Length: 446
Image 1: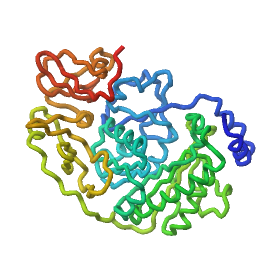
Image 2: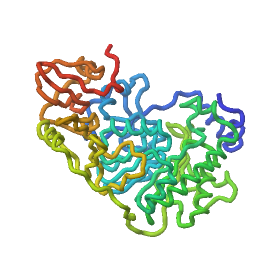
Image 3: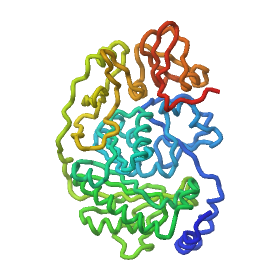
Image 4: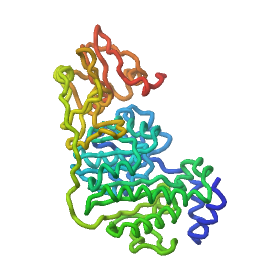
């Protein structure tokens, strides 16, 4: 049930459009997924999900809800990310490119970060930050599932990052915490928790986050600010306040977008160009409510240098494992946290003093003269010397995801694949493939 104060405000703003807006809350919500091109350029057959393209999202597709793609092994393999269709828009507006330095400042649960990683094609540095510890863990898990090697996952306050990364990034996404009005249909609890004071509280926090983001963007860089709310105070109002405080930023026009314009007439003292920001309305497109503004910092300068992490030496046990298993190692900077080895993006900033959840691709752990590979490494790989290949519909696939051993003649560490997509590790001996699928991810079989 929608809050009465929210209804009154939307009636006042939308006037004759309000009835169409209200009617969409009685309609089924739209479900979508986004293909992960880091996994493959030739996905297996997905026609069972009744896919139709999301017009504004590269690799985004609506699916029929009753097909439940989240229960398919392709989801476990990181072939796609289930993502609300309107939420795919901000990353397209940011236009991140391979090789750039990109920051997703409020990144959990990871939909936009994983979308950015796909756009960057594994090249460059992607920093994914989340201030909430529990949500940061979910973010880190999604980065792993999608086979992303060039991401640094942090659990920091934006102001602390601004102290370390002044002028460092080419592109920054601020998908800011908000009152969640655009998600009332998808998440009814957001409507239950909403109060008339919520937008003002959120707007103050959003402006603080944007101030930190501004310090970290290089001159000439692009910043996309987005929310999932209808509140003018949090949308046009926050952008206007930010532009007044940062006169070296301006709103950038992005032609050809299929979204409604921003509404400068809904706030007092609007900044120039607010009509070139974007509103995604659930009664005008097949998605939930969203807002986005594309901001450009004046000037043209290369990203600033910072102290960089000195790479460690890869342990002999790891190199021996990689040779035996035929497991490729991505280019990057080796980083060790005790026995745990990561292969981090090149030109990795120094990590000392930062709360780091994931420093690139986790390769595994050295253990008393042997090496145990990480699940993340398996998901990044395309192939290995030894593979155990199963169809998605095969009983062996279900058994593997349930953590059970599987009959097999391979000896040693072996990469499990489902219809050609890497899924995890097994270790073969005596006609059995011992299961190394992470216990936290296992499903019940049958």
